[in-house]
Image (cartoon, rainbow, N blue to C red; front, side, top):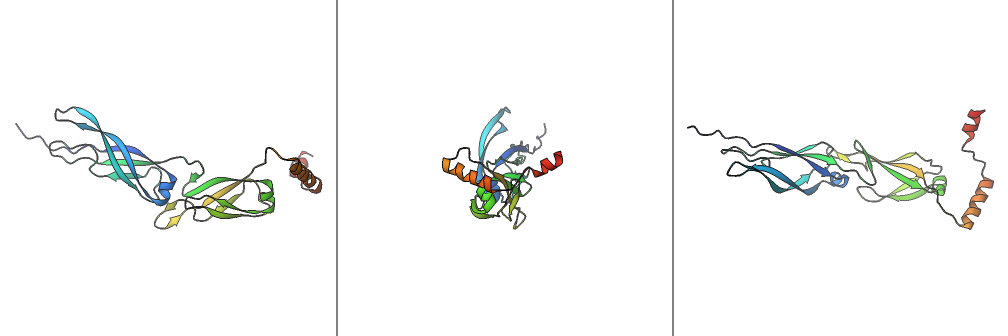
Length: 199
């Protein structure tokens, strides 16, 4: 009869959902997983475990966090395995991610686009004032430098406000009267290029 050799415990992988807010500041979170373990009779059971996890600032999609010794139990005195958490960035209701840059749709009413405006925008680091230049058109991208996601020691991506024009669905008689005055006064033809191309 010979002594059974120590066997290293199995390594496990699981997905860790993370938010843009957690990436921006770094955060502590909890993960609950069921780890397969053998009992005294050698039967396999799934045992629920809860771990506190530190999400580093500037984490990214697919990055792996290693929790040493939190994997499968070793056999015959062998060391336990490790648990690897694969970070998965969750969709955000406001921001779209492109590398370290963020994009957000920002709606302007027609007079803000024509006259220019100062508007307040939410960012992951708090609200900021953004200046909208007069004559801003739909689709224009306005950049807020270093308001994107962090990376490296002290670097940040940028935040881009993608402009769209929102037209009120209803208007009062007075508003319609003012629009009519503007229509009579303005010589701007947004379709001049189409007409020129059709001739």
